[in-house]
Image (cartoon, rainbow, N blue to C red; front, side, top):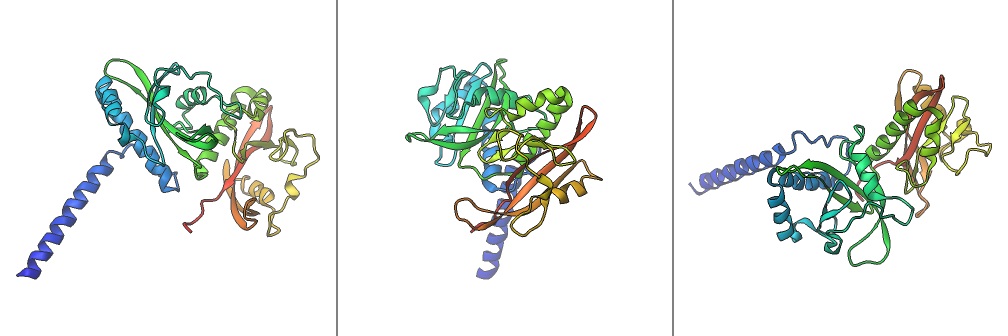
Length: 307
């Protein structure tokens, strides 16, 4: 009898847990997280999305709720913030002194304007969670840290348009981050031709962040935007470049692009901090400019297994 009772209790607990988990996940049915490879990234998107649902449903009452429960929206890993579309901070879980201030022209140490980047990202169909990358500072600290943040635009029942956001300090480099900026650069080239190149090369643009940089070259390997220099004047033979195993990743990627519009290519490089071999991932897109086939790409770290 005791054993049967324990089995019944276990099955009841398991059933309740399954119901709880399915109820939690049902909130995210319309939230595609399949492109992310790190748990921290997925958790951040859910965190910001949950808060956006509160503001969308309850409006000003929702704002009052997050203000009264500030600690629920601030952890050592992430915190919530809310702005209007003119750049006025409405709520900041980590830095309440910013509330009420207009940060439209706020500039990070690299010259990037985070709020203006967010507004542009929210309108970008290739960037469904409005990711931006910039430098910020941790609450209570005095030095800048690399940050990646996601955002959701909401309209409150009162008709007020806001965006809800949150970010990760020292983020893992998701392949999706690279996919977004390369696809966006391709679209910019389609719309503006060679005039787009100067925007892509601009150090304060979305196309350059941390160790990631969008580059452009022709089928012969002629650089229109160099992956390693600030100009494309150096005689840099991209097709002949080899990785640490002697393989030619650019040559191989172009071979695959004969029958595709985009390709991911993995190669080995040395980690600049530990001097060990690490896997890098090259994302390359094929497009046309002035009737000529060109290639647009960027490189990031391949997600590493937990150590």
